[in-house]
Length: 172
Image (tube, rainbow, N blue to C red; front, side):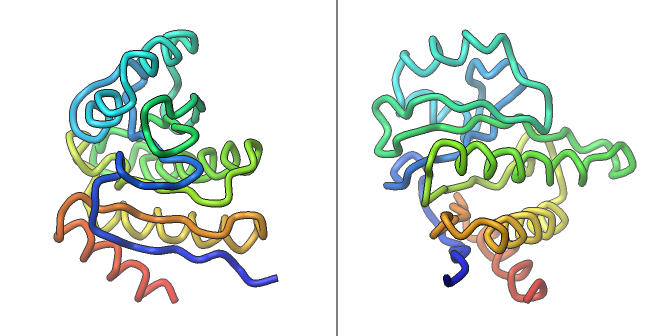
């Protein structure tokens, strides 16, 4: 069986037609700025009600809800680490975000998953370093799980897209 592929693209994650999109959430899971706010707005108010039932989520873990008004069947919410200089376990926590999201996707029978760049916005994780962690963790997950056909890294700007393309090139 062929290994699934990692696709890096420029786009709006709220428009991805996949089994699950990942939300770079905060630990309350109740919506915020950036991609989190965009996903909550696109999914509608039912998403906030579904998230409220979890009473939050620790950094590095993941929770799943229906996609509601999104084209994706599910939203997987994961709070990424806030960058504190790199010696506070940030890389391990960021890798755990990707790993735990892929595990939930597998548990719910998802074959296609779209990720945003987790922690590189208001959480200030350096983009190149975050891209390396993401690419390594996702490609490892794809190698282990033949049911995953495709993982998309959906980048909201060309700078982010370039960083992920570079990380994928150097990872090969």
